[in-house]
Every structure is written in structure tokens, then in C-alpha cells.
Length: 207
Image (cartoon, rainbow, N blue to C red; front, side, top):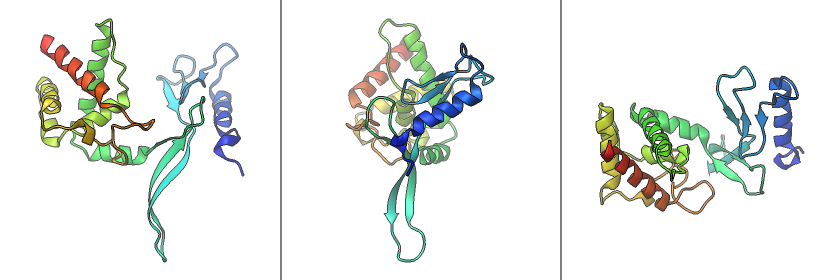
């Protein structure tokens, strides 16, 4: 009878505080956002960590008369403020990322770092979530990602985005369970993506 709305997130926060809290003045737990944040400054962890209090979510593909049903496992959770469910598929996301070209994760880091470099050097910063950058790069073909030189690869990826035949609206998230662009709370919009690509091109050409 114990469900998500019966205080599950509060129980997770309480358990984390009991485990990590040193004293009243050093509380490493921040329970104000979508995730429960554990600060690396106030406990033995060397880095900041996000904890998502979630429950299992399944999309069923078959209900055989004999044997187990086939389904894709995801998770769903609610942010601290609001009653809207957020749904994603982290296991499939991880598996698909591993199946991508070996340069995929390195390229994602490169474009995330480029966003940080841009924001450090401009008054008007880009509010581009890391998750969406990863999904954007996931849609780049492997033959573009395979370029070994990092500078050439960055340029090649931007050039592929800028091609007339590249339709951002057709992009999937890394899990391939949902389109990258749309009106759901887990989706991006093409205007922000095009702005990000444009600013990355401007910064690259100015180097």
C-alpha cells in the first residue's frame, strides 16, 4: 500500500541524511529540485551526486499466453514541486550510448565543454541542458563521429547539423523511446537547439 505519493521521496531524503550528515551545520542534502542533490563539499564523496527517487515504469510490447511478457523498463518520478510525472529510460539510454561509436561519449564531453567555454566568455549564456546535448550528438552518424582529430570532428559534427538534409525534428533521444523535440516535459525545442548549434559555430570560427 506504500506508493510514491505516500512520502517515498521524503523517506529517501531522510535515509540519505542519516547516512551522510555530519552535524547540523554540515547538511550535504539539498532537496529543492527535481533530483535530491548530495554535495561533495560536506561529506566524503569527492563529487556532487544527484539522486532520483523514482519508481519503475514499463512499456509492454507483448502479453503471451505462455511465458513472460516483453517490456521496456524505465522509471518515473515527480519533482518536488508539482504533480506532473517525468518518465525516462536510463538503462536503455546507457545501452544505446555504449552501442554508439567509440568516440560518442568523448564528442559529447567536447560539446558540453564548448558550452561551458562559451558561457564563461559571453554575457548572454546558453541554458542548454547536458542531457539534450548528449541526445543531439547521439543522432550524428558514426561516419562523422569516427574522425580522430578533435578539432576536425567538432567541425564535422557542426557541418552535419548545418546540412539542408538534416532535420532536427526527426531526432530521437538516446533511449529511442521518445522523440527529442516536442511538447512533453522531457522534450526539447528546435529553436533552442538551432541557437546552440549557431553559437557553437560562431565560437569555433572565431578561434
